[in-house]
Image (cartoon, rainbow over all chains, first blue to last red; front, side, top):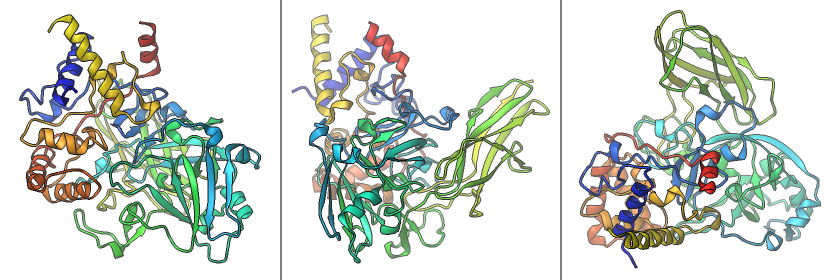
Length: 398
Length: 128
């Protein structure tokens, strides 16, 4: 077997031979500048995923470039991917089964054909990873260093989870519904198991989805079926769903505690938080992003459209305001006509800069619950639910 | 390097990449540009090879090289990963924490992530 070092040499030689890259081995050869050598010029081929930012290829974590967030529905090839583990090996969908056990009257098993016989419900849901924006936290926290784009808006379809649970018959003791998927767990890593409270599970909009944007789920998005817990952080929407367990209390394990929890009260950046002073993340925060112009853009004088997206989990977007003078003054943006209960709103603002020079553009959303995107994010030890004003800097050329 | 040797090495590289990927949908096409991307690389240092070996069972180096953490934070991460199955000789633990802290501390410049190929890039490749 060839050593890793040989392999790296080989890979580098291949890249050079293909005329695509400078040496990838600059670190190994003594150049220690991270900024220089960490940059990889060569695109990574992930079939079905176009121009996505690769946070990790193994296991797969892909981010949507914010500049592509100009449409209401995010196409699957631009939808972010968050995996904690390895995706299931390819399997025969006809043999796939979904079991329901626990605090129910009658344990049930559904095949894909069984699911397809149930009434179909569709939900347009803005799904965001709880860790989206983590790289913007200060001080830095461990985890996938998401930029702005671990968020997307898609139409998910399938039976309501409620329909399945009603067939199984909930006992009085049913308090939480736990999901487990077919993802493969390496080493002694705790499995990705989480639960949602029974009220959310019995909401007709919570789905066992088999389709995304009208087509069967792709492997990266949980084929053949996934939970969709709309308006909540993505971790509540388990992929490759195969076990539903009704519990008399919240699920346990790493991904319920300490994972996916927020401090009960604000903490100072960098401060430690005791586990008993935390709660599980549920619905998403209010947030907006600027899709255009892009950061560091050089703009010609004249009229420009500032545009982007805004969402608020289970709440509605009430307004989006834009500042083109680093927060001194704010003006309301126009909201797009497309809307649905858990879906983001497009917004746009026509801007004609008065003179050439550098501008800091900010966006700030307010929701129907009165929540306002904050100037300073609420820091927490895992960098969850970052939602400070979005910001791009541009230069208008004379 | 002779041409024959080059192709032999290239083939071995592609084979390792294929083995390294668990899931068929992620398996990379032999001729794709991803051959040249071993998943981010760990910098030179006494712990380079041991760290690569301990971590790569579960994830690529890119997950490490994008972190910018203080020494206490790296200590927590290394201990968590050992608990989760990373095989690290107890006598290497401190050196590994030092290695990560020195190379991926809060003051290092940000890691720039690569992109996936676009559909048009993939099509061009298929036509070759």
